Amino acid sequence: MYIPYGRQSIDEDDIQAVVDVLRSDYLTTGPKVAEFEKSVADYVGAKYAVAVSNGTAALHIACLAAGVGEGDEVITSPITFAASANCALYCGGKPVFADIKKDTYNIDPEDIERKITNKTKAIVAVHYTGQPCEMNAIHEIAKKHNLIVIEDGAQVISGEYKGRKVGTLSDMTTFSFHPVKPVTTGEGGMVTTNSEELYEKLKLYHTHGITREEKFLENNSLPVNDGAWYYEQLELGYNYRITDIQCALGISQMRKLDKFAAHRRELAALYDELLADCKNIITPYQHPDCLSSYHLYMIQVPADRRKEIFDKLRAAGVGVNVHYIPVYKLPYYQKHGYENVCCPNAEEFYSRAITLPLYADMTKEQVEYVAKVTKEICE
Image 1 (cartoon, one colour):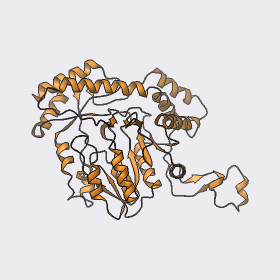
Image 2 (tube, helix red, strand yellow):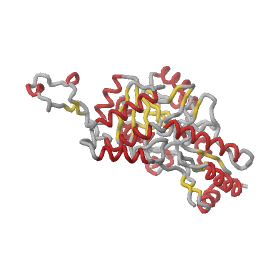
Image 3 (cartoon, rainbow, N blue to C red):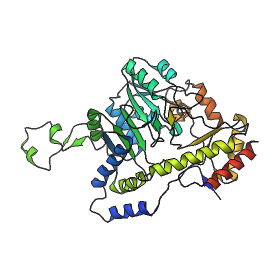
Image 4 (cartoon, rainbow, N blue to C red):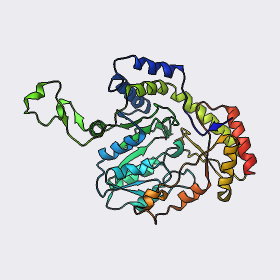
């Protein structure tokens, strides 16, 4: 028996949805894309949504729409996948890392404030493991310093902050639909916003910077403007489009998201219960203002035994992982000016962190097995 840390949940409805598109006229740039965008926008309560090829593309075009450019600084968390910082580099900007809080493992608003300079343009707040950040405090800072707030919601769809779904709290929110995420399109991403101005920019950036919409055309004096074939490139955009095949899967998955989320929360509560009395394990804290999507279930173990525990769990068929190496510790960053960066809380957490399996198709019996083996090894 091998239990992975995460995996997709695919049923016959999902398969049929994909088959139906394969038999249709459109495999890409067709009606399923808009339908998927609407399903996500409606779910989170956003006015607008732009679907893209993956979560990294979503972060990139969000930074472009925010106006991040050469020399601008973007503050984010070091405990995240590299894309949360790389998106600033793609635009010619510079990622700046604020430390995490010891309890939630999310970015610390107080350290965000300390890291702001006259070059700071935006904050990328990462909802790590699916637990929303303390957005009220982050918004106060952003308003004070006139900063754009982008929420990296790759792990949080179905999560809530103060009773509101993540997806409309800030200027923009990005999502990922990778197979281990709460819902999947195979690969895929989305940006949601309530700003029409940002929405129009996002649409341009995700499709080569090209438009056919008459209200945006600049060369209106050209006679070819009267032809339906006419288009203009207004920005240097990218081919970040998603396919109808992927979106059909996404639409089907979104119908089951609440069921998936409820099951993940049940399993997380079971882990909490089963691991509560183990002195060598710290289970994840949940902030009272937040409802986590529980994309990941992170525990902390003694740092000097982390590798031993990790290896023994893998040997026992438990596919544990570690999320994440602090981004500034990665070789690329070390070679490009981050060799002296230190976020003490992030480094301490990383030295102790282990990701236990948690996914929508996981059974309570599997959680009980993982918890039993983990306790035996840790004790």
